[in-house]
Image (cartoon, rainbow over all chains, first blue to last red; front, side, top):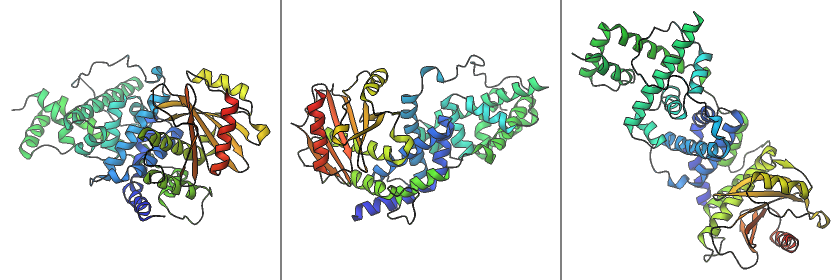
Length: 173
Length: 250
């Protein structure tokens, strides 16, 4: 085993392994399926190992998550049929300041469903911000978009979750 | 005094702690006197708290963790799959050393060998990755390819030469959708990839054998297809396998 190979492995352990849960969480929310998430993460790790020398930054988590995100995109492109993305028939308008009622409580299962049903571009920023606790700048690095885009998607995603939860709560009253 | 629409836009930044002190104070002053904005802020705060519930974060399953740790570990003491450390070592050597390939090998050939070796290793990592269709009958595999891909390569039966056909899988080599037929010889698994060569690249004259770590790779071109066999079978046997295919594929 040459020194290069040994050091690649060692770097892989330091750079990639600590973020395995974050990688799996992102893949799981994106593919919405545990088997696919496992496959995507495994493939992402092989890619990360292969390109470990190209990682020179100091934000290993953002680097790993960007590989996972790209692998998910390739994977979804290969496996998802055109109709698999739920159509958004209702609430197509993005009225960010509607008349509203206050939520009394949030049911975790309803929230899970609402988050699953968000369009990909909103769901990924919410998962990265709220569940993984990434900063705007880190999210921008992961999704390869400007910070302004991150902020607007986050705001719209949060409003959609709110709207959805209010509707469910109103229906159950 | 901040108006309602502006304050509403800034609620997310406030929630994320991204406002300067004075701006933050302005927004809060508005929110305190505005039922609509304070309602939204309360809702968003409640949603954010709920999103941080551990039930919404998925953790990597143990089996996945073991596989990934095996990629990093030189010699794990006990593996659930004894071939994993070997596979991990091969991945590393395959990806980090190009030295084994002749310097005159065109870059796209290096890339296709890379891709085929990585597919082969991945197919060996779990039983569920090896076969999409289990069959020892070439006659049933060919129409299956025809249905899934826009081409159907000849599927050659070599059972009389002690190469058992296990089945087939769809794969991707480089950017090309590829048919993969899986053969076994003694304890060795052979992945035979085949894809359309419609990009006009020149192929090697005859078959070419290269080694990557513990894997041998033989590739060649026919009229319309590029073929690539990957296995831990020794180079001479794998070349013979390729030649048998060449003879019988026509």
